[in-house]
Amino acid sequence: MPLQIYNSLTRQKELFAPLHEGRVMMYVCGPTVYDDAHIGHGKTYVNFDVVVRYLRYLGYRVRYVQNITDVGHMLDSGEDRILKGAARERVEPMELVERYTRRFFEDMDALNVTRPDISPRASGHIPEQIALVQRLIEKGHAYVVNGSVYFDVSSWPTYGKLSGRRVEELIQGARIEVNPEKRHAADFALWKRAEPGHIMRWPSPWGEGYPGWHIECSAMATKYLGQPFDIHGGGVDNKFPHHESEIAQSEAAYDKDFARIWMHNGMVMVGAEEMHKSLGNFMTLRQAFERWSPMAVRFLIVGSHYRSPLDFTPEAMDAASRGLERLWGAVRSARERLQTAPEGPADDDVLATLEDHKARFLAAMDDDFNTSAAMAVLFDLVRVSNSLVASPEPVTRDTLAAIDAAYRELGGDILGLIPAELPAEGLAGLAADLVQVLIDTRQELREAKQYALADQIRKRLRDLGIVLEDTPHGTRWVKA
RNA sequence: GGCGACGUAGCCAAGUGGUUAAGGCAGGGGUCUGCAAAACCCCGAUCGUCGGUUCAAGUCCGACCGUCGCCUCCA
Image (tube, rainbow, N blue to C red; front, top):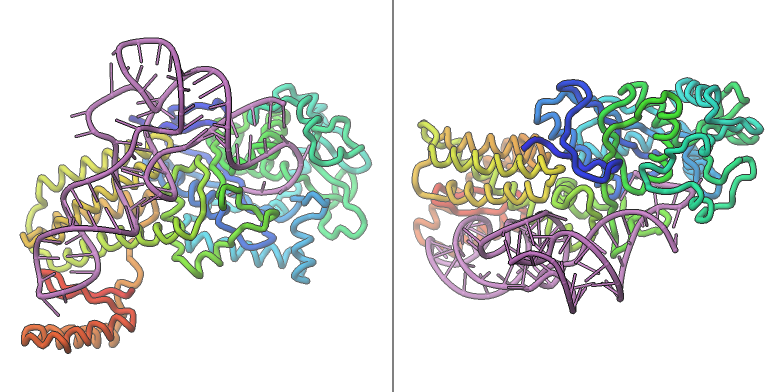
């Protein structure tokens, strides 16, 4: 069964076929870098990371573009998010941008999110945005008022096709007072005149100003991916107005489709409410990482479907942490036994089981990236491998290597949950040698039935965060 | 008011017409172990409510109840 992807534009799952054979062009709306990323950002970028990983696994060459918004994203108050952040921290706007861009990537790295191939900044693409705005004016889809430029929604009949809205209804529901410069309440800014004191400003044919929020994505996506391109992703919260406006701008400018497939991921919820800064109920990734490992956060995210909302609770995180431990524990013990396994051909039954699991795993992924179903298969594999590894029967090196390869491929390459080298597999150098001395001593005590002393050693190591486990193949230890 | 989504075991979460409703966490019982830990085995839901369609429905249709998102701050 080939890959199927749910397309928000058509509201159904579609067989995936890229525009160009073997090549996928993909864009995902990136963060506005004025503050630390929170769990919600983590979910979005982990969700799309899995998409990119899987497309690459299938053999596609993927160009993954994810922008950095560093200008033009306004608050209700009319303040630019970046300027507000800069004032808060008393730094240059670009200093703020640099700081939070770096911190964003650090957080993403911790979540094992593959870096985008291109991370274009809005402020670095002002000429492209101006050119796009100009083109829209020339084609009669935009108008200039007092140095600002607005998109004329009435000139573009399909406006609303993504979000299923009609322009007339938008006007009624308007949350904010309508800007009197607009001809229609639903019109949106392509370029805004800079008021005195607004530091981030660029010269344009319409005077000094700065780009609107939506235009950057249109300009940068098309610049690096062409038009049309294959996949555009983002959070559902951005479906309207952001993505709707991107589509209108780009399609009106070039009379061509913009993105063929639109993917929207679900929001992170906190107690049945969306996690959001304005609600004050958000937790930054950094705060979460103080309490749980970043990979446990990834585990929680990958454990549910990308389109579903995800309720973020301490209980769910604790459960995710334990689940990750179980997964890693299985991988770790398989790799450990691999070290001392005897030479020999791989067991046919095991190979057949691995093939079966792999097929079921891939079938789940093919079904619109059903990572929860895929993870269930991975845990079935955990049971198989744990049973095998714990068995007193000899298991050959090739058999164990095949199991490890399956973990690397499915759990590592695709889901990004199993690193090539598991962390904290041990201590290095002298410390490890000392632990081994204690383990050997304890073993002698056990053989002499001096259990009180043997248990004493185990307990004191436990207090130091070293957990001993006796197996039929000797005593192993892990850092807690 | 408009558009969209959801309601599956104590918690998280797959399943969208057809054998015994995945998987994880927690819990109970057991095996292994000097003990422990880990692991392994066994145990739990009839799928918000009420109707309808069908030989057959968490799975389709309708109503109702509850929850959430979007309707120009949002990943």
